[in-house]
Length: 157
Image 1 (cartoon, rainbow, N blue to C red):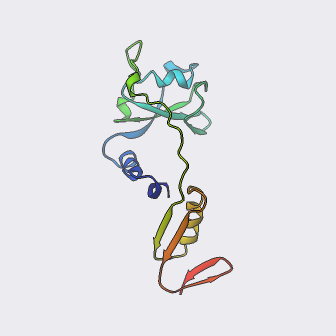
Image 2 (image 1 turned 180 degrees about the vertical axis):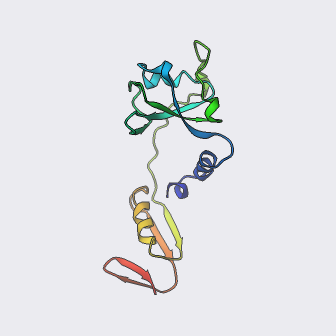
Image 3 (image 1 turned 90 degrees about the vertical axis):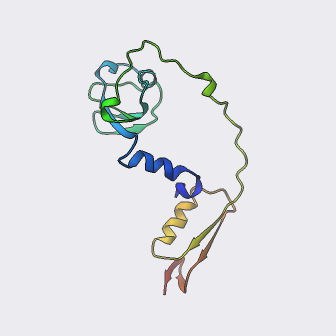
């Protein structure tokens, strides 16, 4: 649903989940045990950390910076390959402060209009999910063949 609302997001998903280019990797990092997730963020030059897979199996993406890394935990990162997810030899990693942009003030979101072409039994679920992401007063227009609606449920004839 979010890919229909955010231009370019489907390209990012394809890049992360296909078998070409960078991928999502899991790796143990014994040298980071006892350190915080925030400190681990700066330990990699060629990978971008996303979160932690705790030893018990629980996964947390973008955990609080003070989250500790314990024995058996795995780091989750975007990297070219499993073998490229290596801690940097450098003592300090340069932060490109010019690349950091100030937080923009959020604009009031305008209602959006969504066009749905066709209908099937999953359409009500899709529209209900869409409602979680759009601003108030947004509309959905459905263009379909004959549809029978009863008690809030619509089905093709």
